[in-house]
Image 1 (cartoon, rainbow, N blue to C red):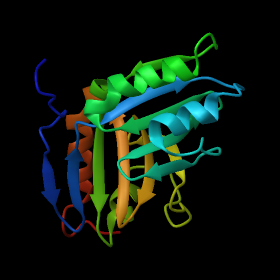
Image 2 (spheres, rainbow, N blue to C red):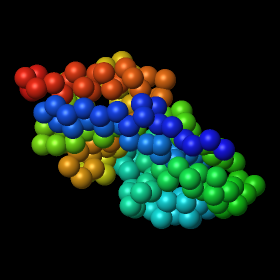
Image 3 (cartoon, rainbow, N blue to C red):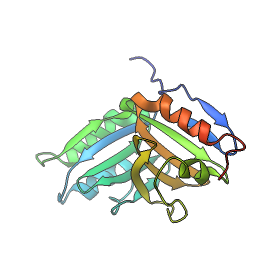
Image 4 (cartoon, helix red, strand yellow):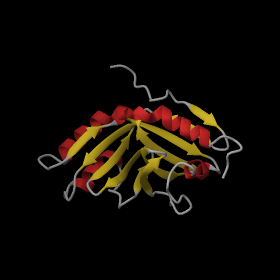
Length: 181
């Protein structure tokens, strides 16, 4: 097995906010709804409860984000994806569900600093002043589908790997000194 490589090999930029690509990060799309064993399965993999609508539950380097009424994004260390999928298969055995490793299909960015929201404010139609910690928003960054949430002193943004370079360009341009809002 080859070593995992993130979309942009950890690219970073320092402007009026800090931008960095993080990863590789283990991500599983879990599609399921109304299963009694769903909460237990999510807890077994992430150590969190199933999140409420538009929320993300974080437990150290693991998390579970609500993506739609029947879809969750499970985040685990990259090396633990196979184990997590096995736990899900066991916990949801003979129940209608879909669990897929999407780790290598996604790129993840951190936007940090006092003006991190200003970087995203220019690119996404989200009211970042009211985006509470633990709230997950699916929207777009320019014209690219993205999910984002506030965490610590910044934001995490997930997009498709195929547009990682484009999104990094958008973020770095938006964080250029002199372009503050």
